[in-house]
Length: 471
Image (cartoon, rainbow, N blue to C red):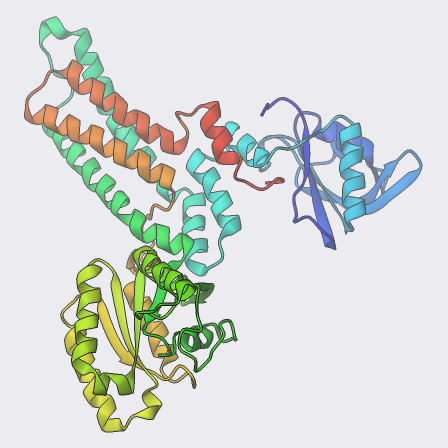
């Protein structure tokens, strides 16, 4: 990607619609845009003030391509930090392509994926973590993922990293200065203040690193595996949660042979539900493969919903208790939700007894809940949704704390913490300033990787290649 030519792309989704926006950015944007556009008022587009909108026609010689609104953004007050012209035209696919092809003939080049945002980064309109948040914002499909992307795009995460980096850089400069006066044996960097700074940086880094587990599931959705014996109502429960007939329901045991997945949003949090094959001993090869996949999905899930039939719990209480405890023992780090389904088939007294028994079992694990419901009628489904939300740590999100969602940032934070730990060890062992400076420089390097103060063409290419064209 080069930064000295003029680029053009469709900035709205491809296909027919009411309107489409075609964006031109670069040093010749005003000249090219003016040559393509004829204002109804007779004004020259490139001579108009920034942030103004003008009615006219995109016209090639005597042929009118479309009546459009042209918006002018002048350097540096634009998204990219360059001169920008945007044509809002009618949403015909033919018109879109005609205008783009016309701009190409006038000297534009087709924009690469993410090139407008790349130019915004290169012109200092945003740092690298903010630029990455643009892609997250576009792909956000729940309140939580949207809020995380907005927070990062507004610089919440990067400002915290920049502040740490600046404080560490100040001390690094003083330590480097000491090296110039090594023979005089003087200390410009107060070691007590430096110790306090390192401790504060370690605490912040550990908090940000720990937040990644929460941020990753809030951004990508929380996988929930619905498991249990055949014919206990797993597919019925999935349909009740989705409020549609997503899975085939039958009285025949073993109907579900493969996993069925779908997503819904509960309380602004995305959940990805996985209906699995019923767990039992079987000689059916296909069903056996489905059961194998069930165990794989349990491994991948953040939450396991173990479904059993309420009347079976009465008849097979001891066996089911053993089965529930096995799941807790096998997945001690997972949230387990034990559900007794088909509660409409038992008496009120039996409901109370089962709930009490399940509460006792669930009380043995901090990450366990238990409830009764009837998936067929939807009774208790809302309570199930609330129980799922209880498993999600949304406190940090509600308190507007910084939450890390990007695996590249997570990796850089891990490496920065390793270097800070080395600095701490150096202070404890009273190492000389030149040795401390080596580890400090490495920590600063990893901080800079996050915000883009340290980057390379390969890194930028990998990041912006994941963007859509036009953004």
